[in-house]
Length: 317
Image (cartoon, rainbow, N blue to C red):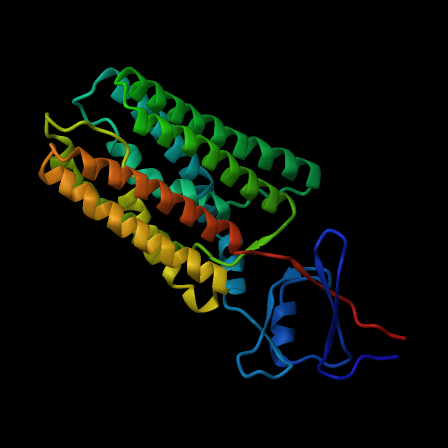
C-alpha cells in the first residue's frame, strides 16, 4: 500500500538510527533536502513550527554543506583543538618551571577551541580508516589534556594546595568522559545541532584578540601566580551557544542557564582576585565554579548531538 501524499514513514533501527521513508509526493522543503545528496544520504529534518505534518530542512544543513566544501575551515577546525591542548600542556610545564612568567596565557586564550572538537570532520572513503583516524585524533587530544592536568596536579601537590589538587583530579575524569562521548558520537555518525561557520569562527578569534590585550598586563604582574584560566574563553563560548537557544530542548536550556550562572560567578571572583591577591577565597570560588561551568558546557555539547536521519527510497508496492 502506498504512503499518503506528503507523509513520511519512519522507524528506529537497533543502533538508534532513525529511518524515514518518503511518500509518493514530497513537499518543497523535502525536495531541498535531496539536493546534492543520494537517496540514502543522512539529513536532519525537524517538525515545522506551524504544528502541521510538513517538515522543513533546518538552515544548519546548509551550514554543514558549506563546512564540508570549505577545506580551510575543515583544516582549521581539526588543528585548533590539537593546538589548544598542546599549549595547555606546555603552559603547565612552563608554570612548573617559571612561576612568575607568562605561564597559562597562551592556553587561556586557546582553551575555547578544545571544546569545539565536536565539530571536526575526519571523513575518508573507507569507514575503517575514518574510525581509526577519529580514535587516534581524540586519543591524542586526551593525552595532551590529561598530561597538562597531571602536571598542574603535581605543581599544586608541591605547593600543598589540596583544593586545587582535587579540582585537577576531577578535571581529568571530566575530560576523559567528555572526549569519550564526542568520539563515540562521531563514530556513530551523530549530527551536532550547533554548527561552526567561518563567520562565527572569525568572530571568536577577534574577541580573543581583545581579551589577549587585556590579559597581557595582568599576567605581567610579578606577584600573581599564573595558571590557565578557562572562564574567559567559556564566556565567549556561551555567547556562541546562545544563538541556537530557540532550538534547544528543555534539558539543554537548563544546562545552558547553569553554564551562564556558574561562569558569571567564576569571572566575578576571578577579577576580585586580580584586584586583591590576598583574597584567596575568591580564587577558590572562581576555580570551583569554573570547573562546574566546564561540566555544564560539556553537557550542552554532548546533549546537542542528535540521531542521524536516513531518507529511504519510496515504496513502490
